[in-house]
Image 1 (cartoon, rainbow, N blue to C red):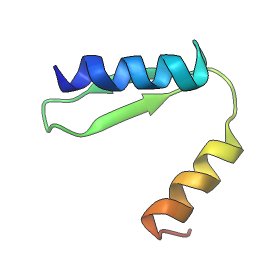
Image 2: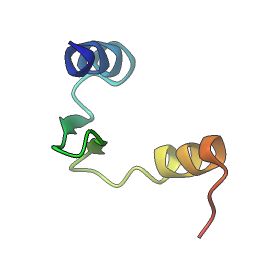
Image 3: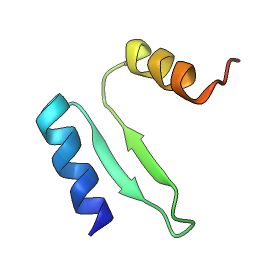
Image 4: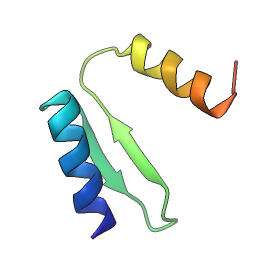
Length: 51
């Protein structure tokens, strides 16, 4: 159920720009076939992580 909710949210926001997978470890993996430096930067900003 949660995976489908995430898919719908991403579809509404980003169309087909992303793919979503929930692993056995319950982590959500989001991928793209295009470089998405803007999305990576925003994610790092939100979680407070910097390289």
